[in-house]
Structure formats: C-alpha cells, structure tokens
Length: 128
Image (tube, helix red, strand yellow):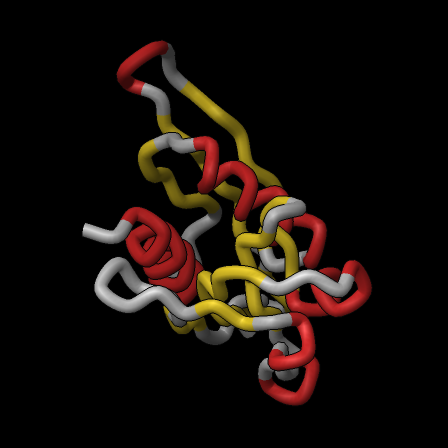
C-alpha cells in the first residue's frame, strides 16, 4: 500500500463527507507534506498524537461556505512508476488553481516554490 496515496485519499474522502477532521498513521514525510498543504490553505491544522509505536496524525479540514476546499487529488508518482520533473517541465495544475506537490533536494514544496527555487524533483501528487 502506498502511504502517501492513502493519506491524500483519506483527506479527500473526509472532506467530501463534511468531516471536521481525519486521522491516519504518523510518518515524517506525511508531516512535511501536511506542512506544505497547511501553508497553501488546503488544510486548517494538523497535530501528532499518541506515543512511540501508536503515533498518528489528526488533520483539521477547511470548508468555504460548506463546500470543501479540496475538490480533487491525483497521485502522479507511484511506487510502480516514479515520475521526475525538471524545473522547466513543471506545468500549472488547473490553470493555477491547484498545486503540484514535489519532493525536491530542498525538501517538500509546491510547483510555484520549485519554479522560484529553480529545482526539480519527484512529482508526488496534484491537489485542487
């Protein structure tokens, strides 16, 4: 099972069901991705809960007048096929309304930040 795909699908399904928050297992990569999503305004908040082996992350979701902020997600790079993009190959998602989340040598960042930093990397997923 792909943990990143599991995380973004859980967030999407919870926001479609009008849930206030969603919970999933903890990892440092997920926390880095959630930090970027929070800065972009796709999620309200997130926090680590539990101890040692039983750690998990609780994410607060954002709604605009009852409609979810996250309308869709699409996993780009999978475990079976990795997708890498150079900084010049990075295109806008939904005409700039969405974001492409990348794993770069400078950390997890959006397509806009990667263009400014002039770095490429593994395209993890698109969110809009």
